[in-house]
Amino acid sequence: MSLKARRFSRACMAAAGLAAVAMLATACGGSSAGSDANKDTLVVYTGQAGDWQLNFNPFSPTLIEGPGTIFEPLFFFNNVRDVEPRPRLGKSYQWNADGTQLDIELRDDVKWTDGEKFTAEDVVFTLDMIAKNATMNSTNYKGVATAVDDTHVSVKFTEPSYMDGPQILGRIWMVPEHKWKDISNPATDVIKEPVGTGPFALDEFKPQAFTLKANPAYYAGEPAVKKVRYLSLSGNQAGADALKAGTIDWQTGPVPDIKNVEKNYPGYKAITIPMNQVGLMTCSNAALGCQGPQTDVAVRKAIYYGINRTQINSLAFENTASEISPGAALLDRDKDVISTKLQEKTAPMQPDEAKATSTMEAAGYTKGSDGIYAKDGKPVALTLKVVAGWTDYITAVDTISQQLQKVGIKVTAQQLSWNEWSDARGRGNFELIIDSIYQGPAPDPFYNASYFFSTATTAKVGEAAQPNFARFSDPDVDAALTALKGIDPKDTAARQPHFDTIQTKIEASIPYIPVLTGGTTSEYNAKKFTGWPTKEDLYAFPAVWSRPDASEVYLKLKPAGQ
Image 1 (tube, rainbow, N blue to C red):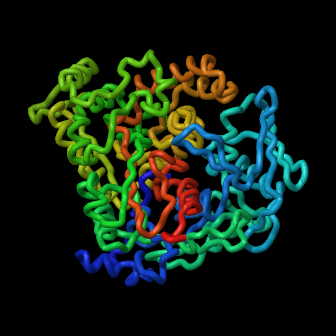
Image 2 (cartoon, rainbow, N blue to C red):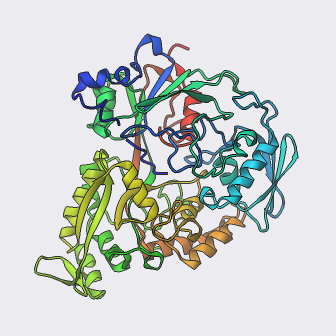
Image 3 (cartoon, rainbow, N blue to C red):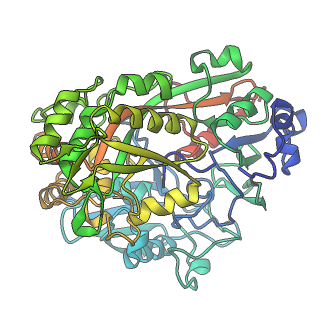
């Protein structure tokens, strides 16, 4: 899943201007975010462009919603702060002495929204289903689960697997056995009528908008937010216009003059958290079918040194982004495990054109009369794909294209619909693509590495990678990840050599060319709802498209005055 989720119905967006946006929710089947009649309805914009395609399968790459809201994990792990996980369907868990057995105690007061009782058998069914379907198994789960009784599950592993804990407990969405046992292909089949245990259930669906309603039988009590309405818009500008008109309550994305949100959008506030590393994903591995100049690490290095990150931050991100590590760990959160063996602690904020050109020439490239490097008669000309409507990223790629001309690399930006872009990214049908690499269920760089740099999470070009889109594969990194899984996270000294290996190998290859650590900014209606995350109380990552974090926010919110 991309961290910048999708983007709006052209039919609904044909009318232009603020007045049209003000009527948008009603015109597209919704209602104004600020009306008294809807004071307990939260209207959100996730970035969707084009009609919603009905699918609430939490394991499908085309799902539109569900994880955390409809289908729950056993626990919620906060990946922004190192705090104890919050129980959801689970009550407690414990590892044995050598990390080969995970014992889980479940709540005994949970029902599915069709009235059936939730039991340990549902957990075992879900885990077994994941283990049997490689395309669903984005956490690389390899355990064997057993229901001890209705409220206890034991998961056994053939080797120490401590790092699997937050993945299994926090990023696998429990589904009802009685509903899913007859689904022929659970990885891709469309779920139109979802049955879950979560705080919300599907209320109504229309291609331009859909609504979740509070679950009155939710074991923790019916949420104070009675409905969550998901709109589609045409992109970042439409989101800003909707904020101005007061027709949405929460969006995650840039707005003009972001420092003055409270002045420009009365009643709204903003929060920015540096979590997601913006990068140029490269289809880097020729052995897995990647084609193009970017398969040469020298070209990737030249791009790395040719980028002016200070200029990109100013022009594209309103200076909300920050420095980034070439080893892919977060500079602030992961500072204690960032390798001292890296050649550069941070990617250079200013371009080093001399280093970029010398890297190309040392690899046998020569400049043609047009100023573009070539080798064996093939110019270094690349296409960089971006989603239409993502104005910040579009500005970034246009800026990068201009910057790289100076170092003899031709980059042509290509805007695609989200569906086209996502399909190209997953199947490796790209040379360069801009996106973010995201974090895992707990505040530990192991998860980011296991997602994006593991051979187990990639595939040949033409097949869907999940989510190692760059097709990066290195046996030393794989071995380090395997070793980390078997080390108690508290043993920091034993872990560090493996982090050193991972980070230095990533820096040497840079399959995801680091741009900046994106400052993820959300704007929210503080006048209508209370309980939003703040920098002092980051109980969840405050991004509307982040799952299951968004559901934690929905559960904390209360209409103003309650």
